[in-house]
Length: 194
Length: 245
Image (cartoon, rainbow over all chains, first blue to last red; front, side, top):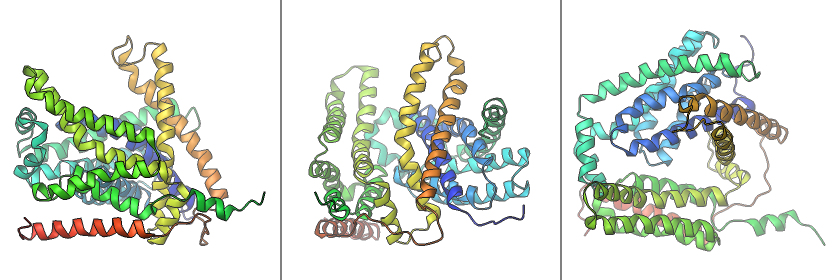
């Protein structure tokens, strides 16, 4: 495509629409993370459920920059919802990787779309980073959740979980992307939305 | 009657500038909910926690105020009766109380921000701090869509429930497909209409947009912003190791 590559108002509005859907799903799922057993499982659930809106979003992406902006918006939303500044960093990295990947498929290839969502999903790992970079401090802050909660989380999240979680985000992102693709074909293309 | 849009804008003008509100949300998210600064900043955090409630009262949002107070009261109530409960219930009460007391303040502040800021106010404030359009347009679209998505999702859930598609129903496994997909397609359709209307009003046009709404810092903004700076200063002092008290 040799058309104008500058982002227009419509592209930015599209980013907003899909980011809103993605965030609502993310938020609903993240509420589960309050229960200790679901905390590590978030790196499975968020990428899988977020796959549908993201795949739908990718059908609107035809210019460079949109995926990166989407990722940064997620980072800002995490900052506003009290997850601290770490997600901003992982969002920037994951957003750039996903952007490059989808661009190499010329914004069409469905295989690079799935891979791109896998890479994008790795931003979720940023929400765990405060736990792993400052293991003691993290639990000191959450003392008001009660000792039972802290014990449960410490049992579930030993330090070696960090790479496992990152990998889980990526793999589940690919799974979510595949599911998203399937649903896209089944529902949205028929309705003329994809 | 002489209609003056200038005056009607002045009447609708909120108590605070959107920029001040945003700074407050960010600070509350980082310090009160994110737990930055630890125990040493406890008095400052407590003071900050009262702020959103006071703001809701000033703007006469009685309902939101009552909801916030009830949330906080339930949280502290649970923490209070916690030691008197047996076994598992004890843990449950502590946990719910911990979450409620931690989140209530930021939720109330977020509600205040969304309820009292119109999209045009938000955009013109963002233009004033030279935030690039790549951030402001998606963000304002998002905040405009959240309530829409919530109400759409509610009606879709109700409709699907009638057919037994809900968690715990006969066809629970279909929840994902039959709730998420309609929610998404209706949101996308609404979003497309929104996008058409926003574009006709020149959002994202290459020229500089003018805006009728009046924003600007007044005395109350300066006081609160000074308060924000003070908290940040305390935090810096505390983290380089100065003993505060």
